[in-house]
Length: 388
Ligand SMILES: Cc1cc2nc3c(=O)[nH]c(=O)nc-3n(C[C@H](O)[C@H](O)[C@H](O)COP(=O)(O)O)c2cc1C
Image (cartoon, rainbow, N blue to C red; front, side, top):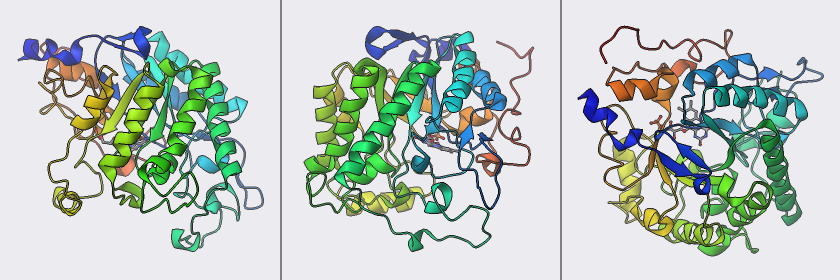
């Protein structure tokens, strides 16, 4: 069995970044927000801290998961103060953050690995308490409902895209091998794509084509900064997270993908989240939504067809039982692992050797914790001496 596993396509090379990078295996670390950053400044009720920087603990965490020729995607990184939706998330908009990320990337490179920065703007999934005012030291619970989203002006759209570009420049400085736009899970780009959220009547809303304009513009500007071969995007066309309840999903995301393919034929890769996979919904609930949209047997196949040779990744629900034979079927080129990579720093080796996976502890997924190493860098690796 071990030899069958090690001969799996999961362990065959894959060229991304228009051939600039050849991965030695196809087990990719998913972008995972872990909220383990160090506060940039002392936080007081008068002067609350809202900026975090990467630290040595994060260097250890990513380094533990780095392998020779393996690809890691960073946790979601806000390109601006207001892009961040939760405490403890190190952004990429001040030099100190770029310096901190450089230490992380250097450690990954030292092990022969590659690392992309996932750029993330939370958009309306944010509240002023985190990034603006009043201070986060208040003990009064804050309700999202009390802070209804504000439609962005066109000039705000343009300046937000420039924030992403600035973060991308800092990412290059930090040594990241490329950029992944977080276009999934109901954050800013997907808010523009979703008919139930985007009620605009200008050129950014009203039809599937117009709802794609923001993402396409963003990609166009980022490609100018980093080069299309170093750019990628993560999409969740059938997701429900953060209240995305879009109609016209196939029309919208197909248009988006056709345009991306046409504008950026050398895109590094495209990453999808599996339909019917959701952390917060049961299979039955998800099925109810899909049935009600008239999409009972949905798959990522239409997008695979549109993207053709562009490397296509899939994430959501992959484990040591269901990963085999998937890449051989031609559906995807690489598999992205989240929760099992949290609890198994040596996931690549375990999959290769058929070693049992450790289970994850949800309660320590997100910091800040009293001891931020708990559930972060303290998951054990396999014991030496186990049979090959
Ligand atoms: C703790 C945690 C943090 C996550 N943070 C992000 C993130 O920053 N960006 C993102 O695109 N997805 C994020 N996700 C989604 C994961 O990347 C992945 O799609 C999801 O966990 C499903 O894959 P899995 O079944 O292998 O865990 C997160 C998931 C978890 C559990």
